[in-house]
Length: 213
Image (tube, rainbow, N blue to C red; front, side, top):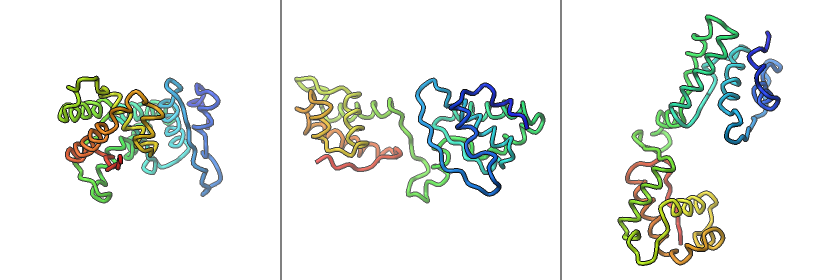
């Protein structure tokens, strides 16, 4: 079958799209991790990857296509159908409609929430939501009205995120990355404890209790 649907891809995009496709029957390709920056064509590559699998006979019901937002998931599915239409004609719509596992991570997690110990009505915060909640906790604890300027919500969230993601003690994070905030260590511990409690009370996904001592 002609590979016209891949003609506009660059070399690296094409390598990702074709990885493990068309190998020996029953063979399993090794997992492929693609790390790409903004504007590098990630969405286009993923859409072509899915379309290429379908064109090469993979059952679309066995394809898992996950992204972070409903808008991105819808756009991805639209592109897959558009690419398939060039190769499969009238069959394209039927094949892409069979992509029952194309959607958001939240949809998948919500469907199996109870099995993994979550309530189905959990909430997912983006960075701005998280910063707003951090700011609310900051106000409630009175830190926004201190005589000397307490770190802003964005800085507080950055400190918290680095401590959690790097699994570093708060003191080490402050000393190594935010030395101008080191004088607020005790208050930041209290703020982060309150922030975690607020996330748990609101059912925010991925909240976990962190020991900042």
